[in-house]
Length: 366
Image (cartoon, rainbow, N blue to C red; front, side):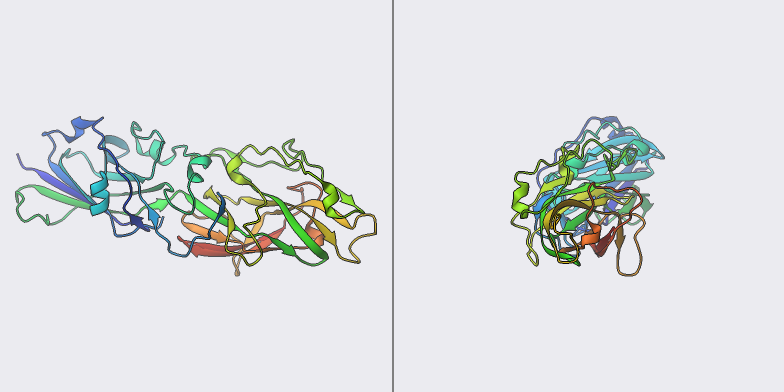
């Protein structure tokens, strides 16, 4: 019987070695002696792929802790396999006796606890509902889920000692992160503000999971916003303990942290599923400048909502995976503070820097 060999080369944005991953023999029939291809999967030297974190630098490398391999015939999964820790370290996996029906490869790196091994077709793999929490579970870009696919192509077997009658194939797969990353600095006084302090920060208008079928937007009338911002003749300390909204997704909410300072090196960081425009919401308190209050409302507690992001040349229409949207220290103007977040009929914009992880710098605007 004439044998075929398949070697899969993975070209990713940035991959490094990770922890042990076990073999999956759940669909061993697809790897039986009846197969007539050999598949070698090779990882490149590097792959680019909440809370208060260090900023992530341009072209940073994401660690890989597990790699799941789906071998498909068209849209249907024929069998699955995984990289061992040694194979991740060697950035190569060669699979013998692969069914001749295999003509497509999909890889998922850093699936974590997600139950994807039994998925039976490409559509369910691509639309798997990875959660917000799973993408925000680790700092930086470490262990963020990545995915890629490609078609095998016949080439020369690099193993000179192998049977020359065997057909050998390779496939180059580019891995991309499922998420974009938002990095937000703290607030500083803008026009009409003497001093200002950040109380809370949220991300709104987000996809609840990787299926991108459920977009969540808590509008100004949503009961989640239980805080009633006020003005006062007393200093902002008179606001006392502020009860902040009980947000449905904790991964997209943070209390202000003393670690994030103007010009400092810490940021509020969030991973968001790419494809739409998340909103940035801040609850702030402070003091209006002379001419921006009437004496009875000198001190304020209110919201600022950014719904537009300017990258320096244009407004972005959707956030892209593998990009970091850096907002730095946000200058708050008196005119932008509202009683409730997500005010209808108001669009506030901010300038952002967009850079590769792929990362991008963005500016939020009202």
